[in-house]
Image (tube, rainbow, N blue to C red):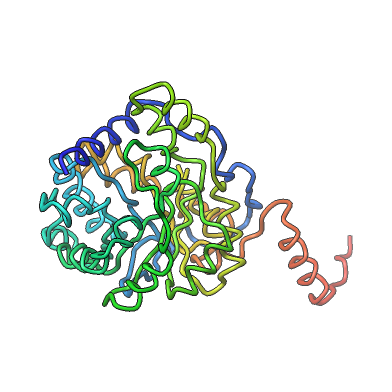
Length: 362
């Protein structure tokens, strides 16, 4: 367990200090809203609230999973929970593997719930742990130790494949997820960690009983690049580095998964940097927007810094709604996009149905 804790602390330092972003784009730069110059709406009247896991949120934001080894995780988790509670947003903790297998809590206690009593809190374990004989037991422990509203099972086959000592046998993952979904008393969320979910895999997961998916697409932190930085020899470094840009861009993943699973609750993460990115993700089909690497620095500073960072993201999302004439998130999902055939067709239908008016006399 000490080796795992050291590795996770290295991960955090590498993400903070080195260039490990995928060189490919998440795809948000290719999505543009049609600006509404007369929104007929007051900015302060824009309603960003939503519901997630049975709880009301002030904004559709998720603090995505972050870890840093047992010692650092305790302070980070406290900060994240306090910020989530203050802002009225959701919190997904980092992997609890060390806590459930080795007993080092790393801040994974019910103190998180005390710091964020009304926020949705999501526990987190890897699929490699879920497929163990004790997988269900570990899942229950992860949920109970933090009084979580749901469990995230994260999929990271590429990272495990290029990581020294990684879990290479992924046979039976889907059946293990199905068992946990059936027997765990809280909902299960399945997410990738930066390579994206395809529509086909999403359908398989929905078939297992999963109702909430996090696409976690390519365009943000590349865990292959992180492992390349950690590699102890040239061979492992070269193997991992080749996969730096591997994966489904986040925008493509959102579109594909929403088309394949129209009833699923969909979280968009992977390369989101601004509230405008969040607005685009929601317009494309996401219900929630997740942020991780971009909030790491303020999270390591203090709660006030993290709250201030999210207040900027919330303000950006609110203005994006305002400038698309969207009174709430439901309206934002119908906002017109530049160059989007569906938006153009909707406008044509609207114009054809509109009553004609005589031109004014001059």
